[in-house]
Figure 1 (cartoon, rainbow, N blue to C red):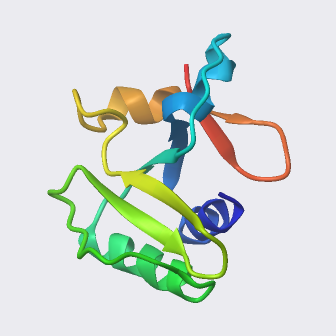
Figure 2: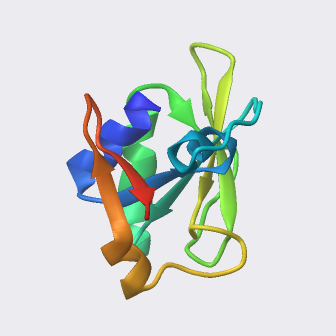
Length: 116
């Protein structure tokens, strides 16, 4: 997650941890094995720049992500790890101005955002 967070910070992308790992921020715990991250890409160019940033640290995708897609998977080639990158904050609605305004940065080592 740190490499993804660094790539987002470098490119000025808004993102949020979603899925099972985000639930403790809402007082709920659930066992999960995957990492789900929603990233707002204003343009296809920024999406491609993000993929290039990840490739520099051996995180790749076997897909050809486009802004019209809902999700794609990235793999860390140095360890058996993967993350789902969602192009919307959930599968029921897209990013919009209100959601982007509601993202709140949590204090800590990396820029971690939650949707309040």
